Image (tube, rainbow, N blue to C red; front, side):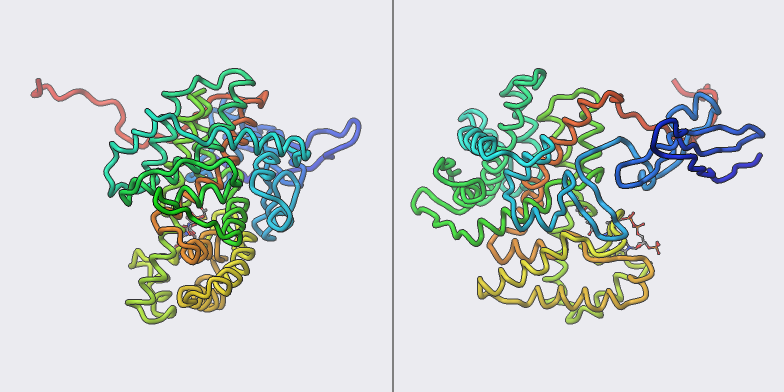
Length: 442
Ligand code: ACO
């Protein structure tokens, strides 16, 4: 039996009459021609969708590290060069010049909104922020000690019990607006419930992020005066988190959504996937790590020795990425924002100093250099959240607020894809072969 590496032969990729490039796989004396498809930024993928039918072979790729699961026109990442673009626009420009609602529209509908479209979206989102009073009581039945992530996931899934299936274009639009509008209210309710305070009703005179801050920190006894610098910092954080192509939670959303499950339930599955410490939950773990270093370890160097030790489970949280093998562009933006916010707030820079020292040592350490491990988006975001007063267990909920339009955009794209099929990977079975049931039982 011989298995040769696929030999990609580019026989022409464009132009009239150009043959489609193919790869050849030789196995068991037979050669199979596999079409090679090419994306707009030049990435090439061997299309193995018919391989099993023709050869009996499946492909094996634990963690889907080298598997393209869909064609997508939403987000482009070049992990080697540290490039991230939404619908073609560099993240750096969007961060500087756009707002979160503009970026949400861009992700969902492919173009930046006109001023009329943006005004309509703002208006629609503003008038859908309230929660049905029966629904609001849901929070009363959750333990106060519960982490706000499962509370948010449960609450978003429960929207499906209050609103109709998103099964027509009009209902899909309303569901999208409801999700964007109610997610900050749900997040703030989860927080207020955990600290035993009454929930705050949204205010229609405030913008998206200011309204969220009002619901988080206002009380019936005292109006919360929103600091525009903090509201802007949150808007920036939401933009930076808004989409990241086929990551763990987005792939979860696509997989769950591929069964044509209810949209709210599908988004709730994305929230659950995001909670994990190897994914969005890393932002909470980073700040816990920095605090532990400040109190216990004494120095970044001591901690890094543990993170490199294969007999120790410690990892440098907020470092490393499946796709980025250079500096995550979101982390670069956040590092600068972090310095600005801390200078503005006048608080302690201790955690930022530890983070910067960790980064400096790690980036010149052979272990991290060899493995191309760089700071990811979660490395500096927690320091900012903490500086602006977001409670640590709400960090990943903040990530959820940001990622929401990306999940929905990916769900919409999947739904409208002519190649749409239910997601259903295969496996290589390694268990027992058929055996007889023991005769001495039952
Ligand atoms: N600290 C120490 N070593 C690390 C780290 C880290 N943070 N990340 C990766 N490594 C090492 C691994 O031990 C492995 O070493 P080995 O080749 O000697 O076995 C090598 O680098 C490759 O790592 P993998 O775990 O195979 O990489 P993978 O792509 O599967 O995982 C992940 C990526 C989960 C992000 C990983 O880097 C990690 O655990 N980072 C810390 C958690 C984190 O920050 N997650 C947030 C990611 S961003 C996001 O999801 C929003």
